[in-house]
Length: 293
Image 1 (tube, helix red, strand yellow):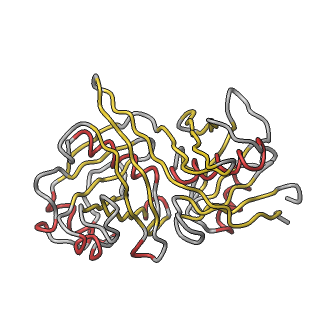
Image 2 (cartoon, one colour):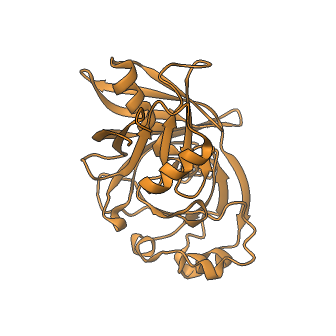
């Protein structure tokens, strides 16, 4: 353990101690999966990542992602946060792109800079997979809502860009604020994943386009303050259903206000020739560095 160094960063954060915190552990190639899981459980952030060596392999850096409960094939804020740490601590100079080799595949992260300081980072997610639609009246009680809270113009649908989420459109910010997770109402729900993204076109900040809450108890996360994987699914959903009137989106999404960690995620997506390209962006702020003992 003495050779392991780590960084703590805030991801999708405009200010320190906002966004979603992440621990990135380097020089982790000698660790077993069980040891990584133990460290992630002890750190107890929504995710912890492990960089398996300081050099590129197969065109990118090998990375594993763990929640306190399990390993994940992909997650959004760990991808951006880990790319930031690799650029800052390994590459140590401005670069246009860093590739992370994850279990879901290779995910490119591109960098914007203000001088030599990273600005917005963008990741291109894998093609969205659109799953089943669910009855509004079946899903609403799981979220502590009434069927009338949901927006009937758009479906409740499961979407995945590596991890499946049920996307739930509601009419008002008040309904988002009132939403929660009721495990006792899950019985019989046929969705592949039991994680939920609830969103509305009303926001706390007038500069933003949507307000989002994410409940992911099935992944060991009661409520996430900023979720790149879920918002990538949302971006694909918005394009598929022309939520903003057409097959493209370029929007600002706020999340985490209800848990005291206001976050900002940037979504760009477009559909062409039956394919949907999804990009999720945000800023990353270094909080601390240390060494595991």
